[in-house]
Image 1 (tube, one colour):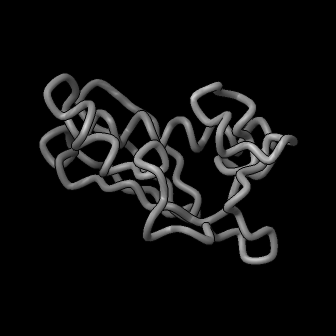
Image 2 (image 1 turned 135 degrees about the vertical axis):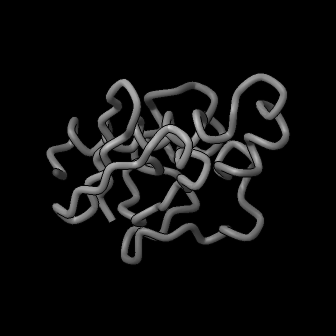
Length: 118
């Protein structure tokens, strides 16, 4: 699912499959990161050195099944690949969960824009 997020002063507009809905800042707490399994984040590991041990040499994760675009070790994936796990282990005392999810949504959107997937 492609999610486009635009922040205004007192609400977020979330566009899912061209259906727009306004989400108030109060409702922001209900926002969850919904992965659409496009595999872009697993094929652009060379954008960040933190993933160097997962890179098979061409920027693609060695654990990504290129036919299904799914992780072959999903249940045992590293913490850096787990949105909620990473937040809980490293960021929960410094960043609000909702803001972290919104950052992930924006990063996903940027990857899609850079790779002309939208």
